[in-house]
Length: 458
Image (tube, rainbow, N blue to C red; front, top):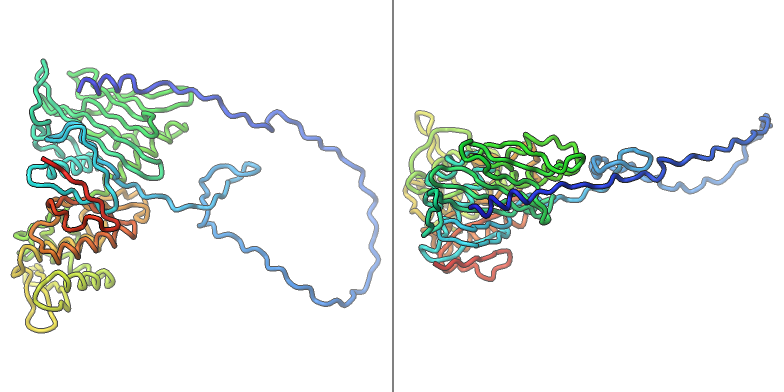
């Protein structure tokens, strides 16, 4: 813990750059004026007939939506117009567990579809807990909210120091328009829960560092890159919240250094806020639910209400869900996944097959219920799932990361194959990624295109 604290004090240096010089700033224009001849009145002439000339097609006015008007000054000081290129979406590309539970000096790379495989006791649930905690901190949560049992995060066998302190370290990398951005965090779990060090860096250069200077005060000393007349800006930040998530409220963005810090911080926050933790609970999905906003909770207890909304608002996704239900539910072809209204403003879901009466979801097995819930998650987006993405960024520039613990629990081979197919198809569109923990067999997805398998050993 002290090593990172000391590192943060020396990580930030004053940056000084020479201002660029305008080559025309000190020049003088040679404006030689000539003498104009006297004007002559032209004699009237009759127009001569001539054959029509072929018309040259005039260039069309470019669509302003195809240009980035914020690209900077152009010739003559006007606004430059540079063809807009598709910007990569901020995505969580790596999770680092330097000292967290059973993990030490561990790094896990995330692709479009990543399956974390391993036996019981290999630390899969701890990995999901660390990722969930980072997402909560990125959304503005406090340490107490995202780490309800901080002692469980301390590395196994960790011995307290002379001041009875113990803690843990986690971090992540986020890829996006600002390039790979690293976030590293050192947390003290005992005797009190607080952040003792944070580092935000890009391209090997620290952009934000925090360090605990005065243990008696609930703050850390933060220093972020400024450039301009001052190399860094120093200010206190609370020791129970992620400093990176607070930077957009503290940095004005007047200098190039400040804009670089803001771009990196916003990229990390957008990626962390787009993480959706999902663990369907069949026992909660069998009961009737009240009519609501139709946003799927993490335990999928309100599945019937979300099915009602999906059927009413999005026929394409609903048709894809029917195809998935046909492949993953036994008992014959599924013609409809309906939501039937009950007395008292409640709703219950049921399967309607080609023949026979409707089957309430309460009669389905655990595997079928979990399959339907995961299929709905993979076919929908932030507008349906109970996730709070960054409202200041268009949804087309965000990618949802579905985080599922025990993705293959209770599922048979046919259901696993169909869910992997749905995940790969959704990831190919670029709007959704999957990070899921599975058993040692990795759902039979080893070697499949678009699927990355990370093996853990106890």
